[in-house]
Image 1 (cartoon, rainbow, N blue to C red):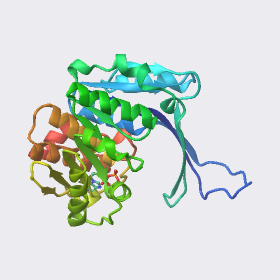
Image 2 (tube, rainbow, N blue to C red):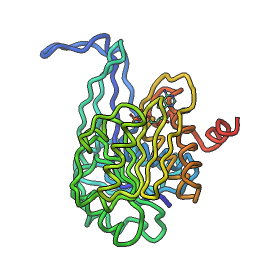
Image 3 (cartoon, protein in one colour):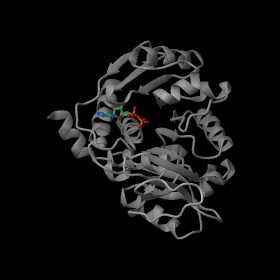
Image 4 (tube, rainbow, N blue to C red):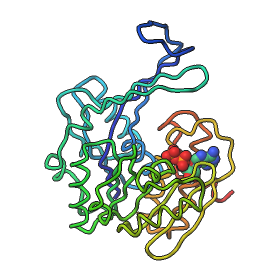
Length: 301
Ligand code: ADP
């Protein structure tokens, strides 16, 4: 089982001709409600990739709460570990203009409102092949999950997004750190553009105690470096990209799923590359995440 401890959001997307100026009121061209949040997206990606997945986190007491839970359950994610906290569910209030540019306001709500003590007993520790974390919940909660996972021998997979420099003492608790170029720049302070830079920056995280680092490079694929000394660059699949939203989340969930089945690292990386390539050919976040069958068809075709 993969246990995701992370964020669950409703994305409220409104399309406008042009962004309003301060004080201005304008009419929207259209509105969409899309379940999102990096935690939930990665849980859905792992589940569609064929893994058994438990989502641990919190929704609020607003009218979105049940929709968010039902949406996860609809993708086959176990939702029994989700708390309900007084207040609003996590929201991303997104405005997109004609040119595709966006403005995003994140309102963490219930995602930021739970402590480790409230979820510790809900985590399926004994069945967990990995615990998957991001940076959209309370930092102390994340750190406590890492410490307990390490104590129990459950590998921690960490996607430090949005990027914040982690405390150095946490790095040795991380088995696999998956992040994009911008994120590894923030975390290591190194300038990263392309595979060579990424591998060098990944080396710093390995020295700091991480076991395996995967840096995703958009249409340039990804690099993987590990304390086992094995470095690889896996190119991206050639596809026509229409919307890269949730490409990273799809990659992470798919790789975690493939690894939890015992697939060797090269195979897991190829599976993740195929899944995320399919995701960028479609619009939307969770709506763009492919099923295992679709990924396998791309891999064998
Ligand atoms: P993020 O969404 O976090 O910024 P990336 O842009 O690095 O992450 O994308 C994650 C993965 O998605 C890449 O490693 C790659 O496998 C895949 N991907 C992203 N963009 C493309 C693309 N244009 N064509 C094919 N694959 C892509």
